[in-house]
Length: 291
Image 1 (cartoon, rainbow, N blue to C red):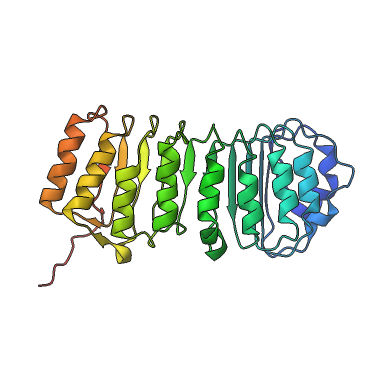
Image 2: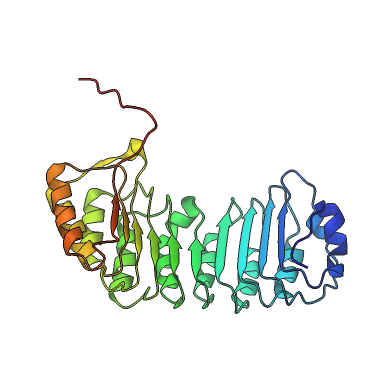
């Protein structure tokens, strides 16, 4: 059985009747604590590959931990949660999932240090999309260091988290031999990174043989004017990424001379016929220019 469509308060008390379930996605916004009615004596869900839970009310998620524990072949886990009393137990059970490939967290439930410390145990993790917030920002460097222990990591996404120091930690980790399988590095909308921080990052970033996508976009209100030295550092960085096929730099205010430098590197790049540089916003109307 692949999926089941019914109300959560009907599904959870009878969850033990679906031992062949492959995917379970539940949205509990505004619902009472229905997770507590999950049977305590659950079977092993050997076929369960994806588990996605979204809840906005305070819930007893110990039953969720038990459900994960009984799903040894879990590949994908998504959790959006505002209340969680024992986050460390969740990370411990996720670390035991040897087949886990993708993990996504959002909401306000996270105890950031246990989360960061447990990341290094998820050895088979391939995709990591990190939550945002002040707590995550405070442990951003620790998260990067833990990610260096994930040899299968292909996709790494940091939004609204990084500053000059933590983004530099990524470059140092890559140069020292980490992130060898990384294909997508999404560092967009990290507005605490200064121009100097970007320049130092570009100058240091190296040894990412499989990186295909580098995203350093900013939002329009946070657009950045950069000097020629920063553009030069970016172009040299691109030349050191032999598999790069997409560079996203929206809201970087580049002039004609800047684009000449980038295009010259693009023409000499090993992926010159495939490399796309996305630097202009496309809007469905003509701009109004006021002098």
